[in-house]
Image (spheres, rainbow, N blue to C red):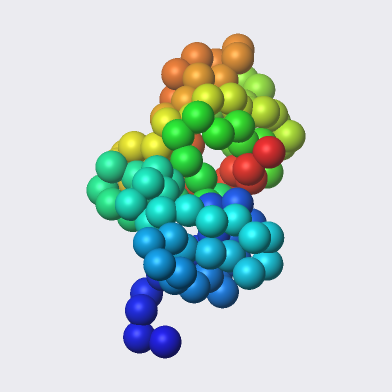
Length: 116
């Protein structure tokens, strides 16, 4: 195929195909219009988590490894849930803007989180 179609936003399958004005996923049956994907960061790129799931604004994610935080003795433990994320063009690969209970507002890298 010469077309470069986006992966499925539900199951992240790469085997999508175009049907009329829609893009269809043969694995989960999800249909969507490519213009309303809403999964791209402000820079126009897809943001994927540590296991390859496509992230979008408002998702809930789980931290997959312990993180050190400057100014904090304990840091963020693996398994911490982060709700209502926002995708941003951050500094040094930090592309998720969020608020974590007990720590406040911070930015995370998508490579250390997994979609919940």
